Amino acid sequence: MKYDLIIKNVSVVDGTGREAFDGAVAVRDGYIVKVYENEQPAQDDLDNSKTVADGQWKTLSPGFIDIHSHSDVSIMGAPTAESRILQGVTTEFGGNCGLSAAPLNPEYESDLKYYLREGWGNNTFAWESMGEYLDKVQELQPSVNLGTFVGHGTLRIAAMGFCPEAPSREQMDCMKKMLRDSLSEGAFGLSSGLIYPPGSFAQSSELIELAKELVPFDAVYSTHMRNEGLHLIDSVIEAIELGEKSGAFVEISHHKEIRKELWENAVYETIALMKDARKKGIKVAFDQYPYRASATSLDSKVSQWALEGGQDELFRRLREPETRARLRDEANSSHQGRWGDIFIAYAYGEENRWTVGKSIAEIAKIQDKDPADTCFDLILATDGRVNEVNYGMCENDIEYIMRQEFGVIGSDGEAMTLDFDGIPHPRNFGAFPRVLSHYCRERKLFSLETAIYKMTGSPAKRMGLTDRGLIAEGMHADMVLFDFETINDTPSYNDPKKACEGIERVYVNGVLTAYNGVHTGARAGQVLRKSNKANI
Image 1 (cartoon, rainbow, N blue to C red):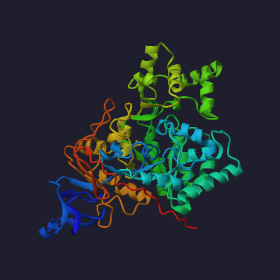
Image 2: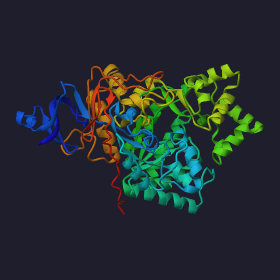
Image 3: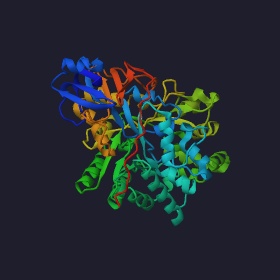
């Protein structure tokens, strides 16, 4: 056979941002080998193709690229990655927000397990280095293509555990070596999570010194900034200064404002700051998920100093009456009027599952407890394995951010199965179709071609992928066939674990992996390793 697959009669949105064209695509050995622009395959080509699919003039685009995910941890338990595939994501980058599955220092293995929370659970690490981790993922044969960042928090744990102090020169050199090794073994960059201990213990000088190591590798620094609330502007300034002083490309993660006091105000200033920095040649951009609620671990509601020393010290402090009283006052003060917006998405243990789907305020009322005490007791009862969904953003801010040409889409989700335990944030299952259905088709913020560019060509370019993200000859055949008129993000906050409507076919490396909302069982994904020979 001349071709393995031809998809004919499609409207091709090729991922470059240019206008769609009618045509067809031919695939062989997992690659796009011919694009028929404004024409259809000759009968001889059709006869010499193993499979011919009639697209019935639906839209064919590159597979969606999720620049911000956490699947590097969860992929081990969910290699079919239904939450990714069924929304059209074919490539994703894990290891964000400072959390990555590697590298590991066995001395601090328990600290890393706690840092990775319920995504790792009680499993045993089967690697130490980034290269060994990537080998294990490839052995797993996931359904999705997966690359990863190396997390700053993971590096810090490997070098010094949950110590709040500045690293010694020896510890700093250790982190830099582990970072260089991870980059050499295929990581795409460094991520930070500056609201999560131990990352939150780091000063800017520490982050700048590490980010300088990225430059010879042409690697990205992705940051969950120090604050996305009352001090959002200061946090953006810190991120821009890091880019200026280190020379690294700065990716601001899931850009948003979560405090009502600064809605329709702060993000206008932060976008202006980024635009001004870009004019000066500082490499800064952002990604965004299309929802007004965030999600994270519930212990983020505890003052950061309480995690000094790690999980055991946190639990000790939550049990010690005087220390708990101080933490209670701090939590109630910082969350005044907000406990009713924070809902439990996942709680480990059968006895705790009744809390899932309820707000902290509701649970506190049922238990006749103080809201902060309710939060602390849940953390203790679940051994820290409890997640939240937090309603904190403004739609006008979301739309203003999304209109910016230097923003791309990232879900902040992870690989899950349809029977995942709990009520996870719908972004895990529906982020990319939501952009297409709500913000593109209904709200008309931008054209379909621009929306697809934000999901494919732009993130591919940002991450240095030269063989994915476009419908073009020589590219890997990662493709999504969908009906733009009917595509819909059916996953909701109350019922998130479902396939999105309107996605007819998803191909990963030329293999049909989802058909009309059903996973085929195919696991044709590849582990992506950046060509990271340092330019020194």
